[in-house]
Image (cartoon, rainbow, N blue to C red; front, top):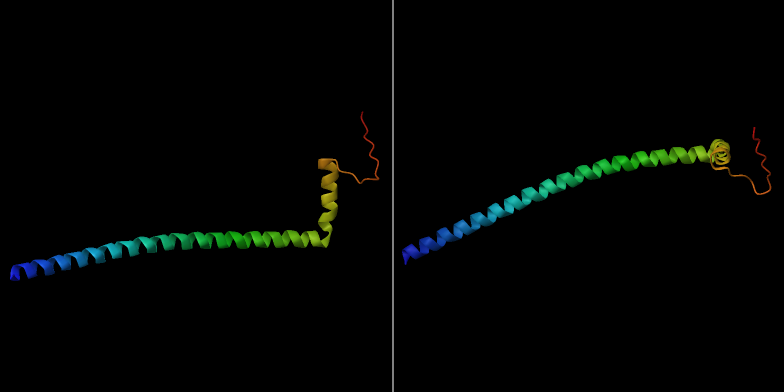
Length: 93
């Protein structure tokens, strides 16, 4: 009877130790994943802020109107756009 009780207590202790080890390993893996995701989040936040700054700069340039002339020039030269009531003459040599 006493041997059986000792065997059960040792078995219980071994089961508890196994459960603690599994819990510790799972916590370590979860923390590693959290650190990886945190680093990715930080990288994406920096990228987002730089894109927002670039957008703000472009919006500011567009609102000033200085780029309106450049956009019109690019549309005319690169894409061949014209106003609806405008006549375009092409000189060929």
